[in-house]
Each structure stands twice: as structure tokens, then as C-alpha cells.
Length: 203
Image 1 (spheres, rainbow, N blue to C red):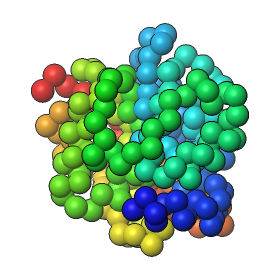
Image 2: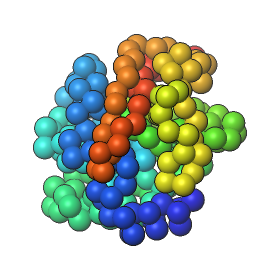
Image 3: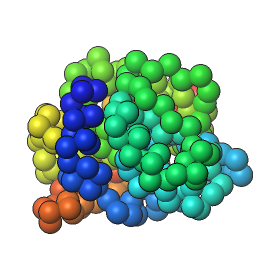
Image 4: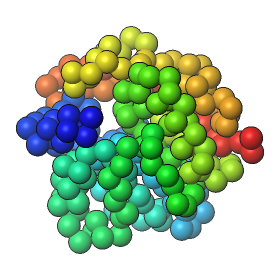
């Protein structure tokens, strides 16, 4: 999988992938609704070359970590940010096998979780999220909605509605908010996404 994603970013570039957003407005809006004290921390799972980190660094107030399987994607983001990227922690890892060494206040994932089609991988992801978030911390996640694509970047995906996401994470999280979003790809196609905000419980 690392080779697959490195090849995708190397060949297509940052703006040549279907999930590219010049301004990740929906993610930013949901993150802004969360009660985060000064110095709060956030990890962006599958953040890769996403422009979310740019906007968050510009806004200030959050300690940002970006985790992605693809070193190629992370390199594009680091090169783009230049010196501003020195304040970001960059982790090249598979989130399902990664072992967090600290906890975060916010966990964000737009379009990474839905690639986990194997139950064991999904369970590992939920376990990592539960371990990495402080009690009361928030998970902001987006996947393809039930009427969204069945495949992306040549790979099968899982599609969810709000209840489906709540069910997957129910052992450690409670639902807070949810919304649907229609994303327009760089070539003008539309894709239906389901966003959810879930709060880490004490379980």
C-alpha cells in the first residue's frame, strides 16, 4: 500500500488526485466548532499532501501532527510549507500498526478510514484512535457516503452513513454531530461524503 500511494502522488501530483481540496472548508468548519484550549493538539490521519495543515498552521493555536503512509505525500506538504512546516510533527506510518507515544485532543481523518475494507484493519484503527485521544477528545472523520463511489484510486472502499460510523466506533466514542458533503473533484465530478464528529468516552 505504501508503494501504491507513493506512486499515486508521484505520478498525479497534489492536485491530480480526486480528493484534492484547495481549501478544506468542511473539515475546518467542524474543527472550529470544537472546544480546544490554547495549546490543544490535533493529529491529521492520512493528511499527506492535504492543504488542511496549511490552514491550521496559518490560524495558529493548535499543535499539529500529520500522519500518512506515503512519504511522497508528506514530502509535498513539507516542501510547500517550507519553514512554516517546522512547527508540524510529520509521521510516516500505517495508522493500523502505528503505536502512539502521546495523546491528542482532536483526531481528523478525511478519506483514509474508508480504504480499510478488512474488519481487522478497521478494528485496529478504532483501537489506535481510542488510545491516541484524551477522554473527551474529538474524532472528526469523513468517508464516502452510501451514494458515493465504490472505488477510489483503483481500490475498493467502505461507504458509511452517520449511523454506520457511530456503530463502528461505539465501543469508545459517542456521536456529537454529522453532516453530508458533496465534494467536487479537480475535473468537475461530484462525490458524496459523510462527515461525523465523535467524542471519546471513558470506556
